Amino acid sequence: MNPRLVAVICLIALVMASFASLDLHWLAFFEPDALESMGRFIREFLKPDVKPTFLLKVLAASFETIAMSALSTLIAALLGLMIAFKASGVRPLLNVLRAVPELVWASLLLIAVGLGPFAGTLALALHTTGVLGRLYLEALENQNDGPAFALRAAGASSAQVFFFGRLPQALPQLVSYTVYRWENNIRAAAVLGVVGAGGLGQMLSFHLGLFQMDKAATVIAATLILVALVDSASDIIRRHLG
Amino acid sequence: MTTVHLGLQPVLRDPALRGRVLSASLFILAVWGMAHLTEFDLIGLIHAFSDPAPRAFILSFFPPAHSFEFLTLAVVETWRTIAIASCGMFIAGLVGVPIAILLTRVLSLSSIGRIDQGGSFVSTLLKRVLRSLMVFLRSVPELIWALLLVRVVGLGPTAGVLAIAITYSGMLGKVYAEIFESVDRAPVMSLLNQGASRLQAFAFGLLPQCSDELISYTVYRWECAVRSSVILGFVGAGGLGQQMDLSMKMFAGNEVCTLLLMFVLLVALADWTSKTLRRVWE
Image 1 (spheres, rainbow over the protein chains, first blue to last red):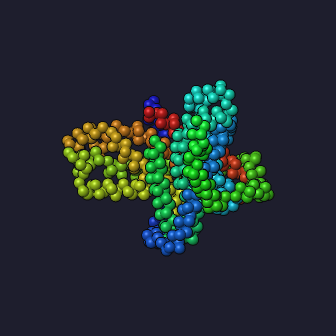
Image 2: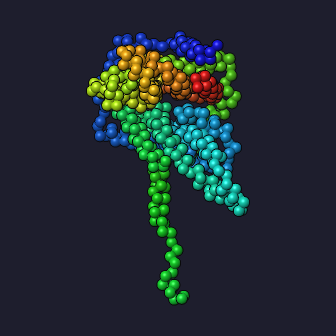
Image 3: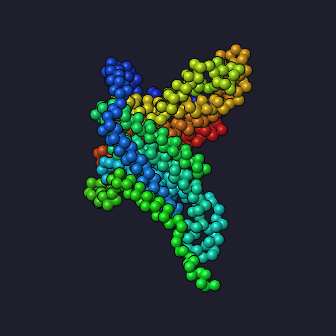
């Protein structure tokens, strides 16, 4: 039988089984209650809170989000370098770090260090270490070994071989991986907060919890602006690098 | 000759010293500022892990929960996560394809014969509006959509399906349109010129050229949707994530451990499925 036909039938079966097994309440949208609350939501949403005092708070949360992402990327880059230098045996650990999403790390860490941006920063750092560690290892393994062998033969120590023979070759690639992950981390940091891990997300879930839609609208707008700014900034950085 | 050198002692200083010191201190200042903003506290972290409650939580991870009821629950929730992703993707495709057709310049009737100048004013305007709508739909993270939708339709998978449908219809609409633009225009143009309708030109001139790429990309996105539907559970949108959140709130480390293992298996399964399916179309 044609494999494509089989695959299409499987996909259709998957979608049908999915719709059949989920208790979806589409009608919940059209109940008078839901319609009314949606109308109120949208009306309040269209009047974002732009009082200076609140905008200042949003600005502070935005800086917190940026700081969370930058610091966690820095920590992950340093850990990744250390792993690439000495500890290539930790590959399975890297896979575990990478497989667990940031948000899951954050909610696990909240139990240990409590609510706030510290848990978010650690969560981002753990996940990013998994990603960057693997990318760094691969970049360093796939490069030309000539300079490293030459240094080794000339009696250089392993640290000297790493810093003068291996690292300089791979550096541009490592930097571009790191910038790319930082971009990812800002997006992640902006939403991590919904489980209570600081930044814009925490503010958003706080105000949504109190049904203060005007304030929530401002926070969402700030998130969108932040992400757009980061996108264009990393575009510019990448154009300069490459 | 020595006298000549007396006045010209070689200056042993690093010409770039000032720059180096400046950038290093700026860097340290920035890191210090960020550590302050994020309430970074390594000593607190060590203390936290010597506290009895978090330690007990971590120690309770092993052995993972393996009672028959809990394993059944975990499997059911895993299926719900897959189902949420699949329903969301299906709706996203239903929305994404028509939007992509509207956005595709080759299929625009008003631009017949002047494809390079773009279409009429109205169609250009419509396309711009649609395009910005797509950008908006996909730039709001799905978690935020889910958070909002949970307040409208209540806890459960409906919010999750809708959140995925909204975000991914923005993504699919954009990428489908790009795929449609990249095909050979000649068959479409000749169909349109002979009086075929837009839909006929699409179905017989355009779709056959790119259906493989379309399905392959959709399957890849489905894999991403499975990952994000786990995350959406954390704000109450059903599935594995919601169960994980519940178990964490009850400090049931053994349950969390089982669910994490299920999650890793699920991601591996989605990865394998998407790779296998895409190989069929490549």
